[in-house]
Image (cartoon, rainbow, N blue to C red; front, side, top):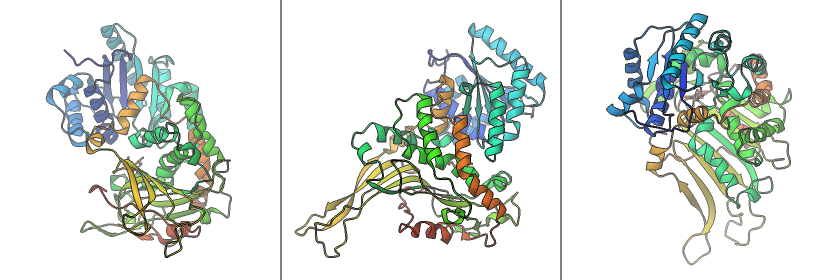
Length: 507
Ligand code: BG6
């Protein structure tokens, strides 16, 4: 007997274009497998992997099993679970450009529906290079698959365009074939457990809202730092750079979640409307201001954990005189009632000292020092630290009296820490996101106007950087905190970057 699962969700067929790719093995299949084990997949489902290479079903399944064993958060697959799960997986070699391949999918789907005696939702997962998104969409609509807007959905991975113009073109093209309600543009940061919790933390606690504004908050920092370099992705990354790869999507989405107004309810469009409001309120970076508001860097060689690592320009598939940035730090101003005068600083980079993603909300000082401590300085202002990974938790830093005969103040932490067990059990972003696509919930996906608004925000900097090459690249060594001018960007406003102490050995 197959493990029964969610009977309330329609039978589902998932066709994965790029079925033999890295993303499929590392993320998509392990996520679907874990959903299956948790009994969250529909009772009747089929996964069809496709790429140009020819495989038998058995060869294909074996390679996916290796992926699960290596990358799934739950570790090695259990024999019985795998055997039940994999009986729903098949492989069909296909040429993305060839209509006949799509007609062959249609035949398989028809057979499945006959077998299931039920209609099914069809998900087209584009885990391929963006160059193929339009071809796939076009061929779906031209082939016998057609495009039934009641049952089909298309999942698009990032990067969604390489600039505002290409994103608009891609949106326009997709929207001639699919309705917005059928398009699921992925930004995997939105599926992360702690990122989703920010909404709960802000909007399910009465004490947060009165503090969450310019009266009490001095500035906000969003850091996504990575220890790894570009690894095997040199050719993609050298054409993109970190502003496109991370800031246009992940970091700006984090900013939106911190800065958004409360939506009326959790309806996908209402939530996304409020995020778009934030992007629209970000002050446009005008020519002449770019260097004041944005800083870039590129890593040189260095030492990481006793091993010498190469500089960016020596990485595989990277231009030896590349001007691509591997680090970016930016300051954003949000022109609305809530945030006027509160700067948001964003930074991200590769080959930095530590891997960590976190948000710091820095509160203002108290207006008066009534404690007359020796230094006559004001008590330290409060700080809220939201750790997304590898540590997961929310920490409030408060001032408190140090036990003893004198009134001496000290900073203490009020910590909400996800336990080790919760961390292990927390679903991976792709599990959350895939389940949402299967059940038709678009809240955590990027809407067309949202992607375009995010491109609009970064375009002036992209253009400026494109037209003005850096002469001092590489300008930070591997295993450092990035270029010096990133410190200057924030120091000129009287602040400094907050680096979290290392707690987790993976960071
Ligand atoms: C991807 C970027 O979107 O996010 C990568 O393309 C980056 O360059 C990755 O390494 C980071 O994601 P995570 O989940 O590991 O923080």
